[in-house]
Amino acid sequence: MSEIKVNKISPRTDCGTTTLGDSGDTFNVPSGSKINVASGGNITVASGATITNNGTQTGFGRTGTVDWQTGSIKTATFTATSGEGYFCNTAGGSFEVDLPTGSAGDIVSVQDYNNTFDSHGLIVDPPAGQKINGGTNGGKITLDTEGEGVTLVYIDSTVGWRSIHQSSFADVGADAEFVAASGGNATLTNGNFKTHIFTGPGTFTVTCGGNACGSNTVDYVVVAGGGGGGKGAGPDGAGGGGAGGMRLSNSTGCVPAPTMSPLVAPAALPVSAQAYSIVVGGGGAGHTPCGPGGPTGVGVQGGTSSFSTISSAGGGYGSYGAAAGAGGSGGGAHQNTNGSGNTPPVSPPQGNPGSGGGPPYPPPGGGGGGAGFSAIQSDGSGGPPRGGTFNPSQGGDGGDGSFVADTVFGPTAPSYGTPGLTASTRYFAGGGGGGPSPSRGGQSNSNGGQGGGAPGVASTKTPGTINTGGGGAGNEAFGGGNGGSGIVIIRYKFQ
Image (cartoon, rainbow, N blue to C red; front, side):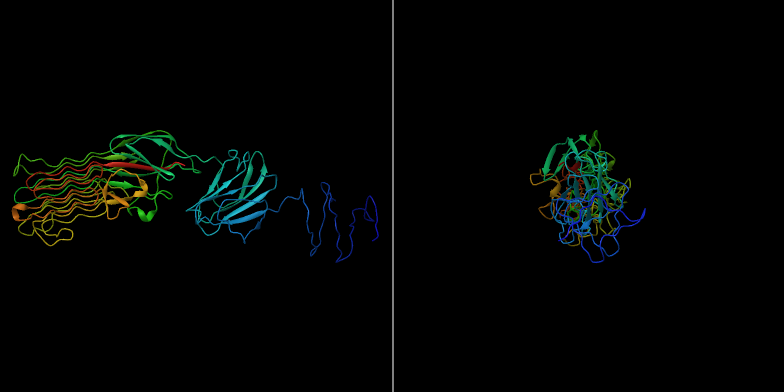
């Protein structure tokens, strides 16, 4: 093998071009050797030629692209390598991509594999002491938009990793912070979530409002007090009280949508570090007679419950001889105008209208049922009770309330709310049953709505269940039942 040793190769003419070898030749640079290109210098490679790098290159930078690792879809936490792009599948749950220790020009890309980032976000975590988009040292970002992807290039210690390509990306790396709060008659922990339950007035004190990388919103259930039932006069029963208004949210990540009531607000409430007053409405009083066969009349509307900007109206009162009361859900009447629901109006609605007692089938008898949150009542004096047969002296059933999944409360929850159709849910805001007419032979009880609504019982007045917002029942002779008090429930991610 021949060898030529020179210190410099120059073209024969000034500013000329020197060509190394002929087409098809190969030039090898031995291990440990370097080719240095001075500032302003260029190496031009003709079309079709190849430079194969089996060593380490420095100072070349990158073209702003990565080599996509299509044969390795990521499903769990991993450490990225500069120059590579990754498709990440979070269908099984959120995980992290740990960025490498960056030096100028390093580049990493990640992309939502199959549109799951909105359900389970991808957390991008820089190494300790490095930033993302000029944020906090070590601060993480979360990609939580369906189909989202981002390319990050390391610039310097001031900015750190910079997002250079992302259609909706505006995050600044920050440490994850979570909502922290106190207050309530009970605080329950279920996984990464806490639930505060207020069975009476109090204060929900937020000591940390959190951030988007952790949590900064809370879900809520706000149920007002149920309306009081009316008192009829022999031989006719009175209408039951309407359920307290019920408003609740169901944000992504707290309670799965299929296990919550369909009538929910789509978004949770943002919170900040401050004290929030909690109002829990009391149940409205049922009409009280001087004695069997005494004065007739209407009950009292339930009290309002509220938290932050959310307010639920008390249930409308049941009546006899007058229009029933409006409210969160309307009260029932006996052959009179029913009470309107969702009053004042909110969207989604907080309740339904009550019953007017139905057509005047002679002889008139039972009172109409009060409305619940999720179901309109049934008429008295002409409608069969739930699962029963026609009886013109039967009071109308109260409307069913709505359920909240046990996942809100946790496995050791107190027995707030009334049992629902399954063991995994609790019902609230059921309407009170209309009063039957025993003087006309209507001895069968009407049903209270699921969610604390009181059944209409011939021989006594019955109240709605406390802390459910259930309406009180109507009655013929013994007076209307009191409505059940309301409840406020607040839930958030705390870790």
